[in-house]
Length: 419
Image (cartoon, rainbow, N blue to C red):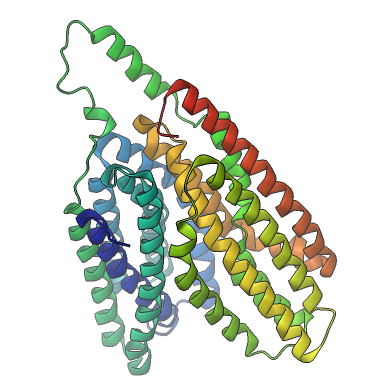
């Protein structure tokens, strides 16, 4: 796939900042517990509280993107994350850690929808937008892996100086991402500037009426909100992989413990290999919305494979688990491709940033609430929990397709956005 100049810069920015994230993810826990003298429970509780609070704060990113332009806001988000990483060098206690972490997580949550809003105005062709986001996702996964491996230098040294140099390097990585983002051209003006060159007399009343309508509509329309809620269920693949899979393997199957790391690696490889090819299937409203049904169905198959792995032993259990992760990975790349396209296409241009920020709550909410749901409802019920989850996911995928098609027809009739 040949990227535009702006697309290459966005991909490069994603690579640079994902290297920083990988470094941070692999080294931060050791730094906080061994150098700042925080307990593991303090770090975990701080991250959990910050994640919940940041859900609401992150909505500001979309509002600001609509008003000031996605490019400037995304650059500010990357810069904010860099400053937060550097600020960890000065943290000496729990409450300082909480303040910096809240700011960092808020920037982290605000980033993805603002990135989508920037792609929407930087890439004119709808099909190319989805492919660019697929490239960004692949690049991000590779960067995370390389960053995590590079963190081994700090972990091996295990000194305050090594960790602080690593944190400064992470901050510089985010700064580099911000600089690259600022060099991306926006092909459409932000909503606040759409009428800047229009005559102020003849059309002032229609313009003021339109602006009042934009301001009054804070939340997306009912169909978009419904699709957001259904996407919360479809994006459970993330929680299934990170929480349900390791717990299920260790507590409910006879598979070797090493199976967990092998299957994590398998998922990473499959996502990197499949994401771009699968994104090419997101062409046209009918096929793209149908991918939501496919997502639910494939997730259901994965759930049933997990259930089957608990009823057999040895190699058979490993085989069922491998099948579960393969189908889970396929569902992940299918869901990504579909929602990247639909979340942008179904959002009115003048309110695209806030629409995407609200839609991103389904992903961020899954990260906050998903582990509780998985451990309390799914895993607590054993194989029956997986069977019930399969039924729910099939229904969610089918319903999401119907809602997305209805929203697309409405947009086509009114000519609100490109459908």
